[in-house]
Image 1 (spheres, rainbow, N blue to C red):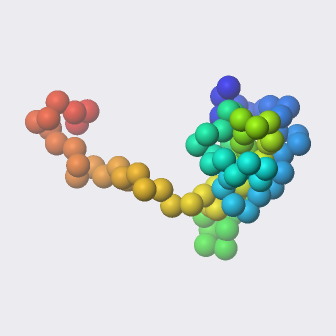
Image 2: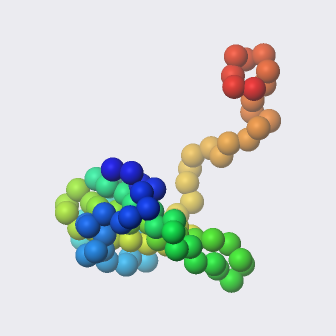
Image 3: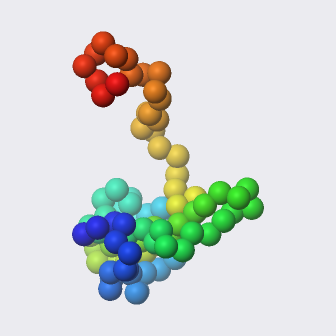
Length: 93
């Protein structure tokens, strides 16, 4: 399953628009989804002139849902920073 495929998979046809980033039926988080597809062919611009996309998810319970990428909750993962890399550690730089 290619999340960036240009043509939407059939399971997206019945997707429900949600306002929270979880399955509307079982409340499972998006990271637990069985399949993902991002509609990058039709971005929408916010009032701040930022792009947002529809993100579609097929939950393990069989329900398909979508939400705007701009509605994704903040992550607790560390963001990438070039200052974290150094030449001497055998990294990419």
